[in-house]
Image 1 (cartoon, rainbow over the protein chains, first blue to last red):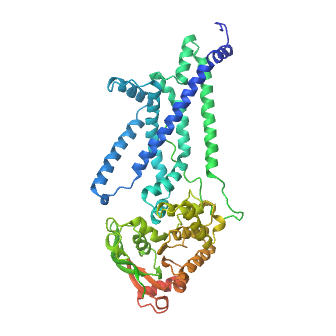
Image 2: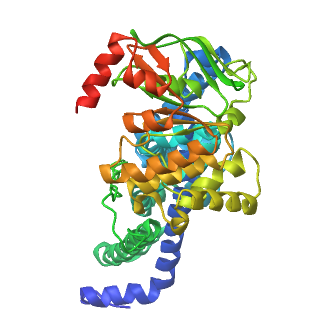
Image 3: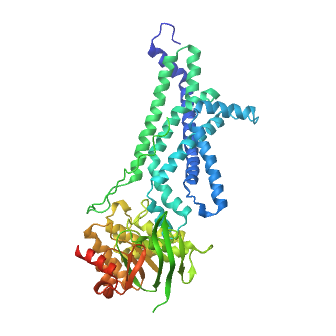
Length: 263
Length: 246
């Protein structure tokens, strides 16, 4: 163990050697929660965004109209509440709310999954709705015009395009989640930040430990960002089909909006 | 006279205060090729869009083989397969290849197997001269190519009638010909066609009947020779003089 006279790098080396496996385990937990939370949040976002995009006219029958209105209002409340409060506060309310009101002691990791999923779902709902609206209405009309139902056209035609359009925003959300899972340390989830805090507290060496921690966070987010860029390019495929060029190469870059949500 | 397939009675359509169609009566017989001409905003496209309920009529009825298509419980999905539509902006499904565009409707609506649907799709893509592009995505195709795939997509549903909503208006001039020639071929096969168009040559040479619309009403409806050479109504004369002058 280094002593009081030891320098910065000796301490860093010491922490990497001694706490290396713990850091890695914490980073693994961070990635696991971020990935699960983003995926489940995405599914929530798809469902909520889909419901909020259903066209709703008074002529459709009173029951359907009011039911849809009610569900939409509730979903709107969900989105607003979760976008307007910090995730660190949501963690406390959900975790301690579950134990003192519902008398359920949530396992820490499960609590982490739930909080990140619900939080991400709120952001992604709005992004999915924007993605659906960004798809040319002619696509839906064409689906209806060959006899497909609204749902069939949505599933086979509109949503795949909407998802492609919001992929950058989805990747962004994943990266944000990798960083933001650190707030879960307040409910003792042993993710990377929690592990770092414990290690640093033991030796009162905060700078050294959190230097290592930032490197780990950076490597994780940077790798994920690069991977997602690569995935997007792969999904787009080649621009041209035949040798003879066509003068109409529509704008693929059309909608990269959708993003701009969280942080 | 052949059997009437589609019958439109007292059809009106308003968007807010703006009345686009006023009490339109109109019928289509089997095998007929009808061109609907008229200035922009005369209600041609709205009439066409009402006929497959992409727009809900404000009043009036539309009968398909004497059955009201707005009746509750009417099988709208099957009907839309029977009366297909080709759009001005093509509206090919951007996330699918040319082949998939022609397959998905057959599988979802007609419940054909993938193999069967693909064979039928291939046959129609060949018919419109697009068989070399089956694996191309819409953004890799020119406007004329897209429209030909869109026609194949509609044909693959085995329709009784096809509605064409200004099928060549969004095309560059040199591509209009390839689409019109496909449509001419179709007309000669006896397919019932309803074509909203600004192509007066097509209206005159290919259609059995020309309908002139103005201000939301059908002003004149007759065989092409009569409409183009001795129109009865002054508004028709005015319109034709203006458009043929260009």
